[in-house]
Length: 110
Image (tube, helix red, strand yellow):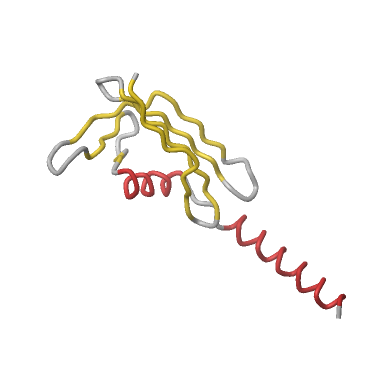
């Protein structure tokens, strides 16, 4: 009985690791996630836009970026954006199982 449970656990962990390896989300998926969650659109990689209200849009400049794709089971992406008023937006996310999850979302005025 214990041997069968151990085999089931080993097979389950192996399947889970294989699934996580083959379903790491891409950087493009990060930008789609960021647009849906934070209304930050980065179609142009140099500058981004953020929806500030019903009909107003802010232009954001990317002042920092940290992308780590070398992890086997997940990705991490960190971005720092700044608008013309000096307001910084820091977003860090982990990509796992085909989705991104926010680790840090910080907006601060400088």
